[in-house]
Structure formats: C-alpha cells, structure tokens
Image 1 (spheres, one colour):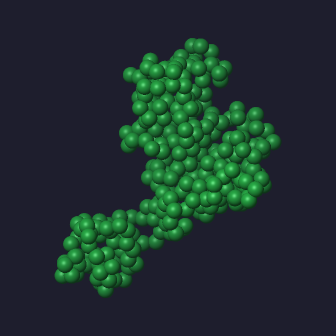
Image 2: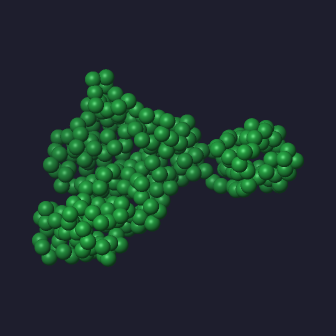
Image 3: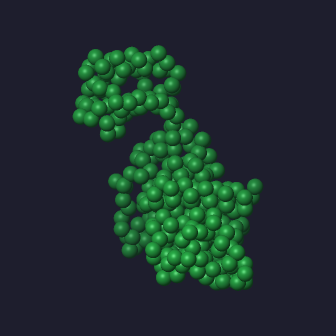
Length: 326
C-alpha cells in the first residue's frame, strides 16, 4: 500500500494570542484505508480536515496528498476529494433526488448518468420512499444520510467524513456505518473519519490516530491501541445511593487490582485470570458490608479505556475547552 496522505509537523494558530489548534501534528494515511481521527471537541480534528481539504492554510509544517502539497495545488486536490462536514449542506426546497442530480450535473455527469447515480444512492441510503419529497420534510437522520450520499455522487480518491453521525439516532448511525464500510471496501476509496465515538472508530477503522490538544499522541490499529490499556475489567455496578468509598475499601482489601469509580460503578483492572474463584468472594465481602451489587460483568479493554490511559480523560469529556477562536 502507498501513502495517500502524509502530514509533518503541521501547525495552525488562531487570533492575536495565537491559540494553537494544531501543535506539530504528524499523520500518515494509507491508500484505501479507513483512518479514524479520534479525539474530544477542540482537539484539532476539524482544523486538520479543513487544511487537508484546502479550506484553511496552515501556519507551519506540510501536508501532502499522493505526493502533492495541499497548499501548493489546491485545485488538483479538490478534484480528488469529497467532504461531508458536521453540518448538513442540502437544499431543503429540493427533493432528495433533485439534490443528488444537481450535484451530479455540477460535477459534469451527463443527465442519464446523474439519474442512475441518484437512484443507486437513494437505494443505498434507504431513502427511496422519500426520494420525491422536499428535503425540509426529512428527519435529521434522513438529511444526514442524504448529505453523505451527495458526497459520493462521483467516486473520490479520498472521502473526508467530519463527525458524520453526530447527534443521529442509532438506526441512522448504523445505516451510515454500513454504507461507509461497503463503499470503502468495495471501491477502494481512502476514508478519513473524525469522531468522538469510540465504538464508531472501533467498528469502521483500519487505523486510528489519537489527537489531543493539537498533537498526535498515539497511532495504531484499534487492537493495538486497546492493548495500551493494560488489564481486563471487572465492572461492578452498585445500587443507587451506595457509599462508593466504603465499597472501594472493601474491594481493595480482597483484590490486588487497581480500583476506580465512575458514577455508581466500580472497576477492578487486572488480568481476568486473577479473578477466577475470587469474584464470588468479592461479592460476599460486599454483601457482608451491606453493599448491594446491582450488576457484575467482565470485559476486555475498549478504545475508551485506551484513550483514558493516554490522555487522562475520556474522548467525550467536555471539561477540556480550548480558548475561543477568533
């Protein structure tokens, strides 16, 4: 495989005080891969996508696509890419079919090809029944599916998806996942996906780059990143109102694993094999301390665990807020 995108020491600052959105970010995206950029709001994901799609110029560093500098030859780059941003960009007064055919004609497809392509995409995104309705009558999820379909009217070399499923219902998310997966695998298109959703990156991506505060802090396959969160998890959910500090002390007396708390749940982090035969004793100890267990589960590390281990906060944590951009 060749490299589709190479980013070296990319920097971008905003405002007179030079708030750093990107702070020496590095990235390599392989041709034909689905590559997820994972990070919380304000981490620099969207700024990076805007630079790669020629909508912003960096303050320093370099970004190339198939060997072409994105700032030196923006018109060539635009011929290769498609972008679905965070906000729906459909015309609400037109029907779904009319939106698709309009984009196709603007991309210089002949009328017959435009009509056939619109029909294919309406079927693929499960919008056939609404094809001849004004888009302003669509639900939010339907509009989002149409918006993504419009990016796929012509086959791009690189498809950028900037948080494509944010605020969608579960059904719409899974329809979009299905089509992204099929489109990328069957057509060999390179997909760059930004997301805050750990399950989305795990489900779709061949490779994940973790971005935090404008820097690349980790890079690898989903399994490689999950391996960074050492130990399996024994998760014990307690009844509402339970004294978590007391429960944590009881578990600490009966296990060698690290104990963490999260709302009404306790987690023990250690190899699962060390808990064989121990779990009943832990539950009995909690029972003897009059601490009621509502649920107990053993699970493997997730990308959320890996992100927490790398950054000290969860990917969806909103407590990190960068200075306002001007």
